[in-house]
Structures are given as structure tokens and as C-alpha cells.
Length: 290
Image (cartoon, rainbow, N blue to C red; front, side, top):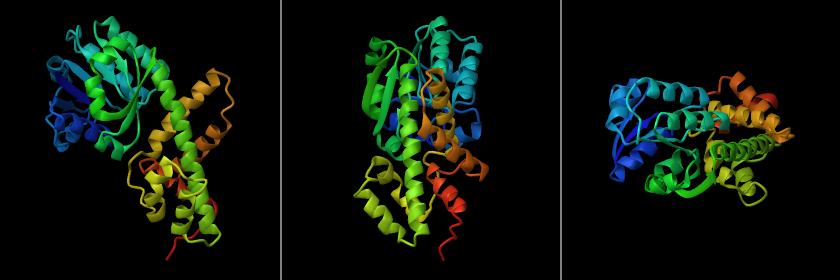
């Protein structure tokens, strides 16, 4: 089985590397060629070459626009897609997942929608949670790929459901990060030791996987990117679009979006989303510790 991988962002590189280290015959392609060259993975320069040589093509991109662009390019290569398998692991709008599935199936390919829950560290360790939509037999056929990348796999059913679940998950993720940032800043403003605040929260009401993952970032104010402000902002926008469609009152998610939009206004787009702490510090006029 020859695998082609498209998309070499913060998540794409460790995920593709896991497949290579597990013994899969994999080559990568990226719209920015320099990223492919710097990835340390076998790469091709042309998309056509990747599509032609691969039995399975996996995409891990930024969002709906990039998925639509790349899959249109794949179809426009004119290469026969009959019998090829395409797996999109990007967090996208459910409508985009459905349209992409329709496009690929119409052109003779198989398609699975499989967004992932988790960031760089679980991606590196193969401990992601993956939610999958599409034909169940097709999922079972390619399950060995997912088992290398994820620790927990959930088959969701029809196209669109996996993306919906991922977006619901990320409303919780964003809201958790917002309240943890607020609590950390609150402690600073009250003159409490930040390390103590985070330790107490870890053993109290703040106990969560999110705090476990982000405690050191909040403590050291290290916003090196595992999951960027830009990505979670995009996901929350998709989620609120769905909420509007379902007439669902997503109050807390709306406030989370406001905070993320503030982070973008402060030019924190490419920082880890734990940088929400900086938004609270600015609003509360908390001076940098000496």
C-alpha cells in the first residue's frame, strides 16, 4: 500500500512521520514545496506524481477552503481516481466534508472523513482520538492506518457527522482554555503565585486534560504553537455556523469566539491558543513579572 500525504503543518509532519516509522511506504507533498523539503520525509514536487503513485491519499490541511482547493486540484490532474482511497483528516465544515465525499465518489474514488482530536504531542505519540465518517466497510479496510495515528477510534456514520462531532469537541476545548486563562490571570491580579494557582486548579475544579496539556505553557507563558489561535478561531466559527443552522443557543461558545477574535487583534494568530492568557493580562492591565 503506497500512501501519499498532503499537508505538513504542526500536525501533518508528526502524523506522516508515524506512518513512515510504522513501515508504511509514504511520500509527502505540500503546496509550499520548501516545507516538504524540510520535513525529513520522502517527498515529491508535483501533486500529479503523488496522486498517480499512491493507493491512499491522506490530507491534513488548514480548513474548508484549503480542502476544497486541494481536492479540486486532485480531480483536475485528470489522473484516474478509480480504486484510490482518499482520507481527509482536516477539521472542516460538515458541508465541506459532504461535498468532498460527493466529488471523490463521483470520480470513482473512495473517501473517508476523519478529523482528529489532539495536538502535536499526542500526534507524535500516536495517541490521537479520531472520529470517522463514511462507509463502514471502507473504514474497517483501512483501520490499520488509523490505529497507527490514534489511540481511540469512533465510527460516526454518514458524512458530516464526524466533522460535527469534532467541532462540538472544539467548542469545549476553546471554552476550557478561556476559563483556565481567565483563572490564571485572576490569580495574577490578586497577587497569588501562578504555580500555586495552577497546582490548586489541577487538583480542584480545573482538573482536566486541557490543563494537564497547557499547565507549563500558562506557567512559563510559552506560546510556542501546538494548536494555534488561528486554527481554534476557525473551528469555533464553523461551530457557530452550525449552531445558527440548528437554532442552538451557543452562549459560551460565542464568548469564546470573542476572546479568540481579541487574540487575533493582538496579532497572536500563530501562537498557541494558551496565549488567551495574554488577552486577559492586557484587559486587566497586569504588568509583566520582573
